[in-house]
Image 1 (cartoon, rainbow, N blue to C red):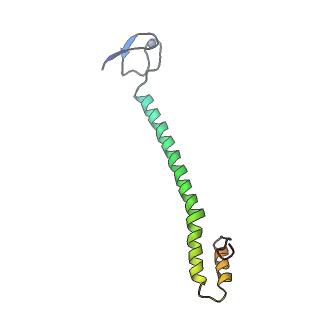
Image 2: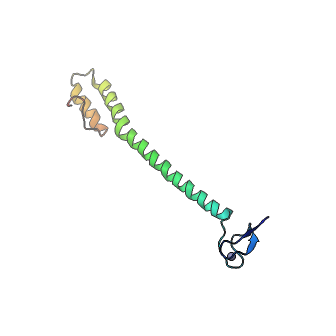
Image 3: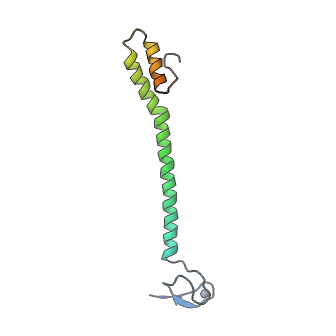
Length: 102
Ligand SMILES: [Zn+2]
């Protein structure tokens, strides 16, 4: 335990104290560092959520429709009415764009 000087009034005090005993000036302590650490964790959590949403949106709007189109294409390619089957298959899966009507 060492002594430090209060930056506000200059009184010597323990560096373990949270505040100056004379003027109550708050000293940067472990408690303050923990609060800053929590704020950093909070930011990291938000960044992770945003990244997860971007990855999910990419999957939902890019990867999933491509997979469904391929599946519908292979399911209907041997049928006589393959275009109708294909479009019905896309509608069932909530996808309206067709590779036949590009
Ligand atoms: Zn002080």
